[in-house]
Image 1 (cartoon, rainbow, N blue to C red):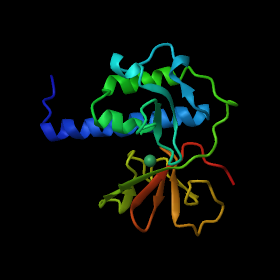
Image 2: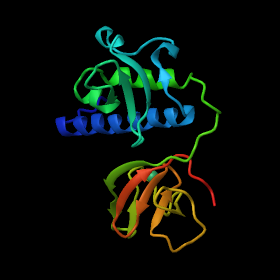
Image 3: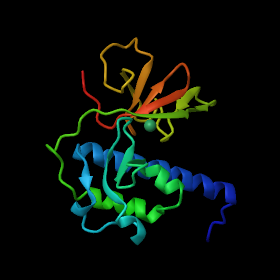
Image 4: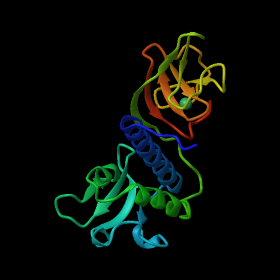
Length: 187
Ligand SMILES: [Zn+2]
C-alpha cells in the first residue's frame, strides 16, 4: 500500500537529502584533493545557462563544496547556495556526485578533514543513551574517543567522540554534533 506523507515530513526528507548529498560530494572532493574542472566530467550536470558561468568545483577553506565561476562579483559560490537559489535541483546534485566518483584524485589517498556541522543529538530515555543523527548509539556500533577535528585519540578523557557509523564528531556533555570527519587520523 502506498504511504501518504504529510507536507512537514516531505520537507524534512528533502532537507535530509540536501545535507546528505552535500556531505557525499564533499567526501568525493576530499578524496580527489584538488580542484576539478567541469570539462573533466563526462557531462555538466547543470542547466544550459549555467554551463558558461561555472568553471570548476572544489572544497573551499571551510571544507564546503564550492564552485569557481567567471562572474566578477562571485568568483566563488558555495554549491549549496546555487541549490538554495534554485539554480540547480536535486537531480543535478546527485549527478554531480556520480560524475565526481569517476574523477581520479591527486594521490588516491584521502586526508583527514573535518567539515563543521551543528546538530543536536536525540536522547533515548528508555536506555538512557544518546543517539547519533545517523541512528548509531553505544549499544550499536558505538563511538571512539577523538579530538575536536575527529582524529582518534588513545586518551579516554577527551570530551569528544567519533561515530563509528557516520564519522560525526560529538561533544558528549553538550549532546551536540560539531562536525564530520570521514577519514580521521588514527592514533
Ligand atoms: Zn553517526
